[in-house]
Length: 184
Image (cartoon, rainbow, N blue to C red; front, side, top):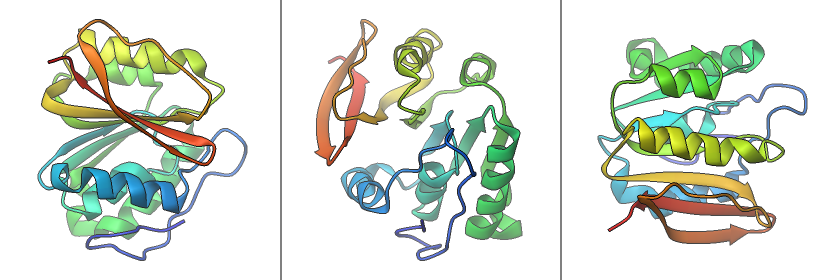
């Protein structure tokens, strides 16, 4: 696993050991960031299921202003910190806020809106998609014009709260990317 583009292109990323983390494949991440390219510069990014931090760190490498990355597993948070230091370096490390917290507690603690939100929990956490989307919407954590990208198994589904809509979907093997925004 590596950073695909931007200032840290080619930097190796580490993943937490065990079955609780499922890193996004490089080819899926590359396709995702090609789609999002115009939205990245200056963006405020939220990744409440950080894992390795790859999605948020890729965004930072490509010019996002800052990112909040959370994970409830202390081992994953240590890996995220290691990856953030590798990608950003000591001087730019403050652009990444890394938090060891369950996604529900993390979302409840936030008081600002984000331009990009990555929802990439382990696929077995079916309820997390709907729960996180509801909390994001109720707490007004999606900036106007912002996007939520949910990565999930190609066969899975989730419910959207009233006010959010699926804007696009892409399938890559057994992975589906769902692009969500405010209902127009």
